[in-house]
Every structure is written in C-alpha cells, then in structure tokens.
Length: 637
Image 1 (cartoon, helix red, strand yellow):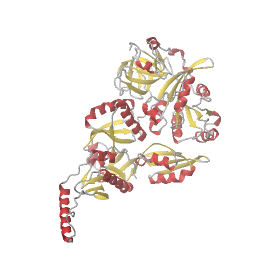
Image 2 (cartoon, rainbow, N blue to C red):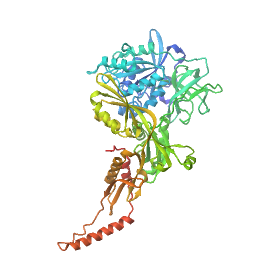
Image 3 (tube, rainbow, N blue to C red):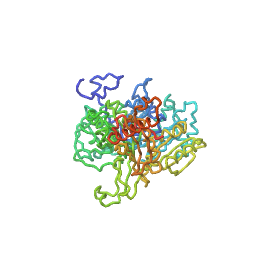
Image 4 (cartoon, rainbow, N blue to C red):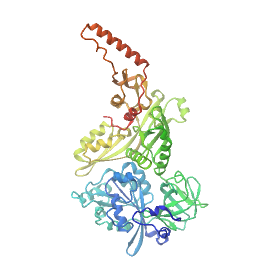
C-alpha cells in the first residue's frame, strides 16, 4: 500500500482509492458555528432509526443511492445479523439549504434498553434529537425512556412519525399519543416513510430550523469531549470527539484531563461515514482523532482533551455504566485461556461498559466474572467474541449484585466497610453475621394493549413486583409502572412478557437502587458434599421451586454410577428438595428359576450392602458438560 494517509479511507468497496484521493483533505474552516447542527436519532427498537439515517446520508449525497443501502452505519456483523444497533455511530453530512452550506453531525443510537448508556453518551455531543415513532405501533417503553434522557439533557426534540406507508399505519392516533405523553403539540410532528424516502427532506429542514447551533467559542483554548473510542490494530485508539472550545490540528500536542498524559495528534478528520482526514477541527464540530494512544483505558470515555500547557476546566463526564448482571466466563479448554484473555481485552476496549474481575472455579478452571448492562448486552458480547475472535466460551447463569449490611465488628474490620457488595454467590455471608440483605430493584415501564393487562399484572405479581402507576395512553394502550427486584427479571421475564402479549407489549427499566429482602444462600449437595459452582442466592419464598428445578436439571445431566447419587438442595442444614439418580445394578436374580423367596431375598440383601459400601467410598465426579448444562442460562420452569 502506498504510504501516507490511512487504510480506513479505502474501505468503501464501491470506491477505488487512488493515492491522490487519500491525500486530499477537507477544509473545515468554511463552516461557521451558526451553520453547524449536532443531532441524534433516538427511538424504540425497530422503529426505523438506521433506515432514516440511510436516507439522510443519501439525500445529502454522502453515499450513493443504491439498492444495497441498508443499515449503512451498523458496521458490526452482530448488528447486521440481528437487525439492531448496538454501538452508536457518527456521520457528518453536508447539506445546502437556502444558499448556505450546513454541516450536520448525525449520531445513530441503539434502541434497546441495555444500551441506554450509549444513548446518554451520544446525547452529550448533541443539541437536539429526532424522536422516531412507528406509525403502526405508536409509543413504546423505550421511546418514553429515551425522550426523558433527551428532556433531562435539555435538547430540542423533533418528533418524527415513521412507516406511514404501512397498511395499518395510523399517524393521527400516534400524534395524539405524543401530545398526551410528551406534551409536544401534534402540528410539530413530521410524517415520513424512511424506507420509501417520502417527506424525508423536511426532516433535514426541521433539523436546521428547530435545533440550535452549538454554544461554543473558537477563540478559547481547546476543550474536546471524548464520547466514544474504538481500537484499531494498526493505528491504536481512535477517539470520537466533540469540540466545545478552540481548534485542534495535526501535530498539536494535547493532554488528557483524566490521565494527564500528553500525546501528539497524528491524524484528525470527520466520519463521512468512512473516515476522511481534515486539516483542522473547529469548535462545534464532531470528528475523530488519532494520537498514538496504545490502550483504550487512556481514551477514557467522558474525558476532556486540551492543548498541552493550556489546562482547562474539564467538561462534566458521564456517570460510569453500572453493571446490572454478572456472569462467569470460562474457556471451554484451559489451553485457550491466554487467547481468550487477549480477545477479552480487545473487546472490552471497544465496549467500556463491561467490567472484568478474575475468577476461578474448581470444575471449570480459571476464568472471569464479567458485569454486563443487561441480558442482550451479555448475548451480543458473547456473539462478538465468537465472530470477531473465534473464541468459544462457557457462560454461567447470570446473577445480580447483592449487598449485605454486616453486624459483627470483626467482619467490618476485615472488609473495612459496613456494607459489602456480593457479585459471586459463593462469597455470600452467613445470616448470623448480617443485619440485613439488600437486593437491587429496577423501575420497569410496560406499555401494552389493554386486553393483555390482566395477564401481565399476574406475571408481575408472580415476580414479586409492586405496582407504582398505571395510565391509559389512548383508548386501547396502557402504561404500567412496577418496581421489580432485578433478579426476577434478569433471566426470562422479557420472553414471558412477549409470549403473554403475542409480542405487543414492550418493556424498559431503569435502576432504582436497593431494597431489603429476605435472601438465602442455597447449596447443592451430591451425596452430602457441597458443589461450589452451583451455589445460588434466592429469595426465601422462591427457594423451593428454584432448588427443585436445579435438582431436576442435575438429575438429567449426571451420568449414572454403580451406586445411588442423592442430589439435594439445602438452606443451611435444612434440605428443601431432593432427586435421586438410581444406581446401575446387575440382575442378581437371573440365575434363580423359581425356588424359595428367601434365596432371592438373600441375594438382593447382599447386593444392597455392596452398593451401600460403594456409596461410602465412591466419589461423585461431576463431568464438565453436566456443569455446562446446569449453569447455562435456562428458565426456571
């Protein structure tokens, strides 16, 4: 490859890169602050965010109009396969309106509840949002959550009603819902069909007219916010930045407010949507910057960059993402440990919201305890490990972080605090040493057609939820708000909700702190010996059903021995569930044809004594695949 420029510009398959094309840099000084608009697209899953982004890219001539333009900004394989957005993506669009050239910076965001952290980060770089609502489905739970994220950030909201070309579309009903729930007048709604491109032009005009330009000062020293970062094997860390003050150009010495390290800017540019180098970036613009950072921990998301020896007041960063779900991850074969370790490191570079702790288990060997934002996040992370790094792993059943308020002075001294967080059930402290246990709770919002309300309420009550609010959005849609214990919804609540409501109900939750709960630690015993890996923490009321389910699953997956195996679930010394794996036994009566019953009794008694003796000396080795079957995410029937 000829030297100079980067390989990234040549990635577009439809454009052959000549070396002249690569060296040509865009001059960004021709865009005064008043001609810049930074906006984001937010919506519920599948309401057409990425399709609208594709049309906006085509309209502004950023990409050529072809039939293949589907999810242009969704670059990950997992995003294209599932048809969802996982990582927020940026693109700069140039648009001519009333004789002026405008620079529009668009950020496409994910819609699923697990990735609301990505959404809040993207909004920090924007002044306004397009709130996309499906004309067929109307307002859904995530629409509400994302609207309030934008509302709290004091951004201008432009409601866009999409999919008006559908047969069952009812834009008027959706307008009324928007007016009722968000208090936005219905005449502000723009009705479009992103798929067919109907009326999309008016969205761009609304962006220019209704969203204010960024409030920035180019004369001040440089202040840039890092709102995302990715890792490139050859060029190191690529940081996505939004400039709030000043100018940055190639060759500048910059420093980070978080680590205080200094770097030299090797390359800057805009994403269009492929990387395009520029000479400089000015305040109010959004672009990327490469400065020889070797490690993504150096490009901390939410960090402020400034010119070396010109320190500035750091910008308010982001609340760090709080993991809601923990799971153990182990290599299928211990010889793969180092490969998996490097794959994990590279992937957590691009996904900073995953927390990693070293962990080891007797049965599964060395591994990690990972914290995720939710189940879909865990699933996507696992899929990316497999697709991008060819790593196959064992994931254990997800658990949630509990807290315990200690009562004994000795323990408080040992942990150096009164309240401890427990992410591994094996370290759950005994009841005698604890004042109270706390479990995480979330505030869940469910939006559903009213004919399913009764079934859904029963489901929520079965999951120990407490109703806090109920409101009719229109004649036949209800919004329910419940306080859920997180461990009740973490495994299969979403699936149950979808199947109960024929897929019409939508669900979203946000963190609501901790509440006291009667929690117990449940041990699983095999012939009286505790199996460390199967220890679980459950609510007292649910202990029996969960214990029974685990015992049944173990019974199905343990191989039979020459002696009987008793599988028991115990809380302390009290056994609450039991299953038995019967022994293999030789038919000792085969040689008796008729004859006296006492002869048969003698042979059976002798066999029973032999089995009893075997059971005392025999050791139950749990094979690895039995563990995998029991620990894999399964719904507790």
